[in-house]
Length: 430
Image (cartoon, rainbow, N blue to C red; front, top):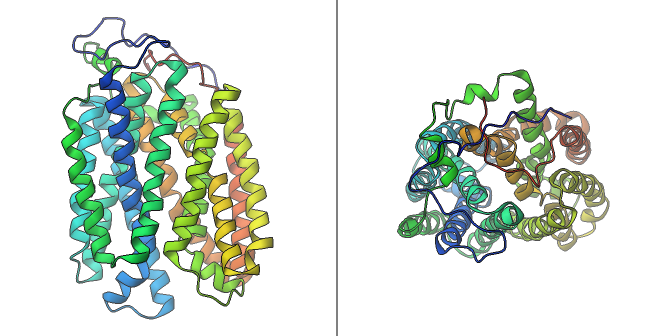
């Protein structure tokens, strides 16, 4: 196991205008409850937009004049890759800003950016415009989750930290379910407008949200804050960050291949009825929400983040294998099995919580914001490998083989993680 990180209390010198210290047995302050609510609703809109492209990919590209099935797949992948690259760069940028300027400024700044880009997506008339706006949207989407989880983790007492972050993830992931419903019945342009307007409306809640006291305390200390190079050195810290990212990488094999290319997979299985992208997203994320709530409860029961992650990785391997045995039977079986696979990826909330707990206050937002986006960006090489494997192995065998390989890497990475369930977050990285 990696050595325990060196600990210098972040509050050693004190700080003014900090959030109140919460007694684990006392009622949570209104400001803390509001912070959980804002982070949860922000992630709701975040996920609504993130999966919306997967749902409207085909109708929106057809509206831009692309009708060839092969081109729909290739252009769709390119747009997804551009969005994910934007998220990777945005994760690094917003993470740095979160440790330098504060969690709240990043939280609301990211919401403003991706909401504006979402609205503009409704008015694209050419693929290059779509590419630019998906990059901008991805850049903005990168900041919300890490900033929100970091803020919630630092405001809540240790015993309630996992509950708070699970609430954020469960409410947020419901945004993907909402996107599946909206995408089924509403034209793609209006879907983008709805997502953008929801985000802008959320900015009204910014009044009354308090900044993290742990962050405020670092402002009075002479320590480097928000330097992403600290994640790369010393090597032990780099290995810690790599283990965090790779432990969740299988989630985005599922999200980047099985969810997005569900129609292509269903066709390759011989299912006669066309598989609808909106229904894939709806049923998949119903499962994800159930899995995230379950992982939060199991984590509290086991009092362990790492054992919960390992449990869900084993569940994911089994569900992928079962998917290819059962899903080909009918259209409805396909959706139900996609729901099961989604549930097995439900350790996302625990992963993001772990990412925030693995690093000190002066590097926490950088790690917690960049780690999820490094995971999402893994979908770029994963989907490229999948596309390269398809001609020789076929869609079904390529998906099964790559999925099991990704899960194996995730298990090895999870075994290398420190247990952080009881960790006091009042420390600095030196």
